[in-house]
Image 1 (tube, rainbow, N blue to C red):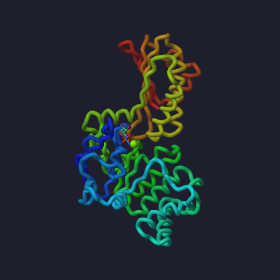
Image 2: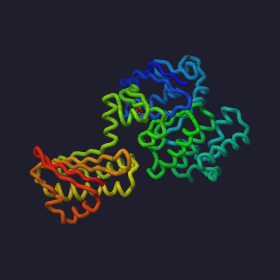
Image 3: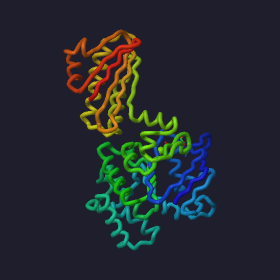
Image 4: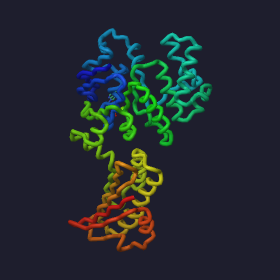
Length: 360
Ligand code: ADP
Ligand code: MG
């Protein structure tokens, strides 16, 4: 359905897309993942011609959409786009937001556009909000309206650019479940996302983008479990493991706590599990271990989430002489709190480093 050949996009001083090649078939759901700044948004914008690529070819149903004189509004009709920000018209009712483009561009009569708008609103669970104004809706609801609005143009493929990044964490789920339902119906989609569990279970294929190209392209099991190439491996490992090194007493405690929270959310850990990890960091690492160390502070804190359930392993490595806090101060308040949370703990000392691992 879509063929991309040697696609390149240069701006003054940066070349976000160097050489992108891909074939996308009808009914495929492709998640695009990768570090930020690697050209994911640029790729989507080039596909529906919000940007003019510098060179290369994009064929849609055999038609070259980059040739001069290509019908851009036809291209954009075929490729709907859903952005991070929802861009609804605030002075128009929800259903009117959906009716506008089909009336203007597809020539639908008001009643037809209204009926279709209502059908789509019901589909995304917002039938009863049809006559409300955007301000009356939550972020998650607005994004569902934006999806309905895109579908109203009957696109052949929908491109999503981080559709949940601007949302409150509590609203991410409702938007992802709408996208999941569309996948089940066989809609062709390309989704730039940081929601890795979602990408894994909704996608037929993953594009791992790095440095302006599709560095690795494969089914989710390949990319997430057995990546073939070096950079993909490093990226996937960073996703699964949270790691921080503390080298000074004046480290940023709030940043680490926030980062644990974000990591936990990405891994869809329960709030209780997230709180427990934060508590272990504070009571074990900050109160107990840093309290015990001299001026020379060096401590590594890591969390790895199990592949099968949401159990976690916490590893703490710290320099200095042998010191097992469970044995040395197991009756302190901090260590009692920690002991209550863990199913198992171990300590060992080798090559001048202590290592604690905890299962929770
Ligand atoms: P991603 O979506 O993967 O985070 P982007 O496609 O947004 O990455 O950006 C890739 C690179 O291109 C970045 O270095 C960004 O600064 C640059 N870039 C994107 N859009 C423009 C633009 N309109 N003008 C200049 N540079 C841009
Ligand atoms: Mg982007």
